[in-house]
Image (cartoon, rainbow over all chains, first blue to last red; front, side, top):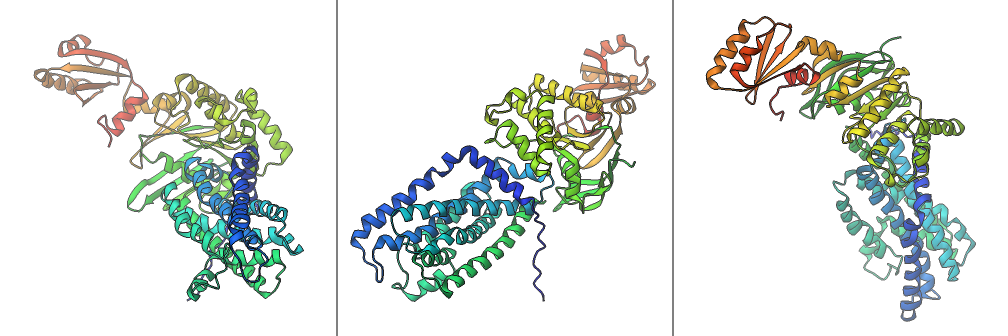
Amino acid sequence: MTLALPKVAASYRAIRVWQRHRDVFLNIWWSEVIWGLVEPVITLAALGLGLGEFVEIEGEESYLDFVAPGLLAVFPMWAASAEAGWGSYFRMENLRTFEAMLATPLSVDDVTTGEVGWAATRGVISSIYILAVIAAFGTVQSLWALLVPLVGVVAGFLFGAVSLSYTAIARSISSLNYFFAVYITPQFWLSGAFFPLDKLPSWVGKAAWWAPASHAANAHRALVTGGIGWGLLADVAWMALAAFLFYLLALALMRRRLIR
Amino acid sequence: MGPIIWAWQVVKRYGSLVALDHVSFQVEEGECFGVLGPNGAGKTTLIRLMAALSPLTEGRLLVDGLDVMRQGRLIRQRIGLVPQHDNLDPELTVRQNLLVYSRYFDIPRPLAQKRVEEVLELFHLQERANNRIDTLSEGLRRRLILARALVSSPRLLILDEPTAGLDPQARHLVWQKLRQLRKEGLTMVLTTHYMDEAEQLCDRLLILHQGRIMAEGSPQELIEGYIGREVVEVHGVSPSHRGHLQGLVASAMGVEMEEAEGVFYLYVRHQDGIDPGTLRALGRQVVYRRANLEDVFLRLTGRGLAD
């Protein structure tokens, strides 16, 4: 038996979808970003400076230094997932944006690709902002941190593709709550962004290996602290492969939903 | 030049539901072609097939010579589709909506800008060009949706219930624009369940019922073929007079009769049908009127409540 990969009918026209989202974003960006602007600063101050007074982590100068790169993994994860979750669902079912696009030369695969690409973009916007915030708190220790947006693209594409795959099978907008409660929120807290996993039972670490956010957290920690090595490469490769597989899944599920 | 739409034995099934059942028809260039039918007749399904948005189950369907099963992208490059439901981008302005849409067609920027201004003018939307969509009335949004479908200069305009839910003023404005476009030679296919809309706009139409074509022709041909010149409605016939009325119709030349909800409909082909005085003696109220498309429609699809 051979495993046939689905034929991808996406084209450069996916950029047209991305451009549409960019134009809308530029019209209403303030209301779109306000939450993402405030939350990381509060989190960094509360955990890093507040809670950090009482916490000591082996091999780290301060808890603030430990938390800062973790934020680069989890907040962009939220931004990308929310975009391809609630955002894409709302466009698909409420605004009928996909219907309008599909009446033109755009294909379903173009729309799927544009949606995931835009989710990745929202992730990267969040990455760059958080990088500036943690730099302002003085926690960036290496110039390798300049590569954060690049890793952010890979991670954003991965979270966008996972989230859109779920959106494609969601029956209602409220059923997306399951995805965020059961899949995104645990990764937010338990992927090694806020505390190291190696003091926990070994099965936790093994389970975390399957969570994309743990690889995003490791990769960002390596870039910000300058801990460059094979580990970084392995984490990025893991995310790139998963991104590709979930992208194929999103294509297949969106076709099943939109072509009847 | 062949027909712009060529449908042969088109079948569309959704599981066990047959939405279209061996439908064949042609649309010639420059025509305004109507697809008339009650809700659930298969009108929207037919539109989805013509726009290559949904695969056929059986049969063949060519649009402008292109096969919907293999050349969907090319077909959609050449058509303008007016959807039944509003799918404008509410966070964008009127002009931005048109520009974003023209990008989907890969229209080069300078040409797109020119086309956008042209359709804004055609639909009298210039003053609203910088307004957000949420500030527009229902009628203005419909106009913008029409304008948007024309921004790519399509060879064929496909409209799904173009005036559904509009007030009379807005409806007439849309009709006026569509008539103007028809006069300019644009080919149009539209679905509707408004008989007056079909009569006003369409050169030719087909009546669809439960996925099958019941009749096809110009509005005039259909009326003359299925009804005749005139319809006489006889209301309030007492049970004792029914037999008399039926006998009268049976003996008259070229008169057919149907009964629905206690009203008798007499379809009269010739001027000298039945003596009006006799009819008045049989019913409480007798109404004479011209036959119209609605009679054809109801005759073919049943005057009773469709399920």
